[in-house]
Image 1 (tube, helix red, strand yellow):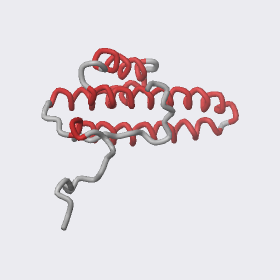
Image 2: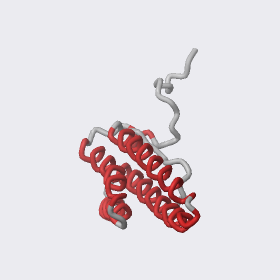
Image 3: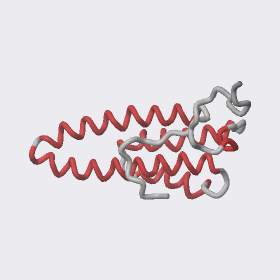
Length: 133
């Protein structure tokens, strides 16, 4: 006999009370934290400021928004550090190639995180340093 608590959802490791969200505003703001960080990559330091503002204003109000804004902020800080290192390596001409890969990496994972947040799913970026906890 199967376990009645099994509900055909994969085990995400996140609390169930955060998984069932009906508030569309929370989902949109969580998605916006990822999307604005990705969009503002063209205008640093706004790629860090946008998720930081969302995290600062909503971290005590909604744990779902807090999680996604924190993830977006950590990812943008990691991208800024990598971009700085790759710009130094640009003098060796390998930095230009690495910066192209970094931009593609940011675009792919930023879109993926935005979509996951809008679908009421938790997403953690790969290869991200967790500065904000």
